Length: 108
Image 1 (cartoon, rainbow, N blue to C red):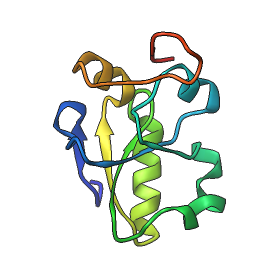
Image 2: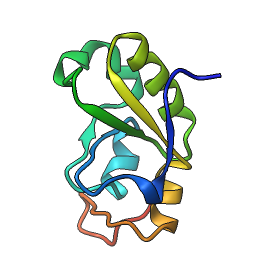
Image 3: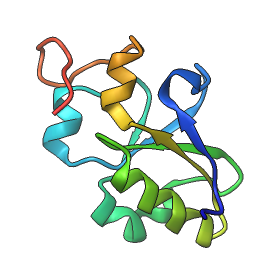
Image 4: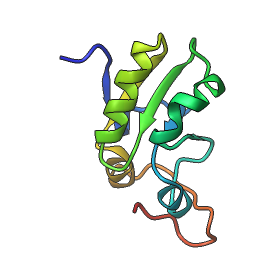
């Protein structure tokens, strides 16, 4: 049993604050426009970049890393929701994406 919510990618509000915890190469290939990018292994040292009073929708590729990140964030007093299925399901739901490499956005 987790102490945070899991939300389907298709149900994430358009104005949601999204925290992407994937690696740099995954982010560059395709991500949610306006998302905050903090790779999972950097989260403890970069925690101060996040607002503890803001709902964070945490996303990775398939949901495993974001589950761990959301669980940890809630333990630190943050409001975090896990995006079920991650960027794979975001893409499948037809949600908008951008890339940093000038190519059509993809999920790696």
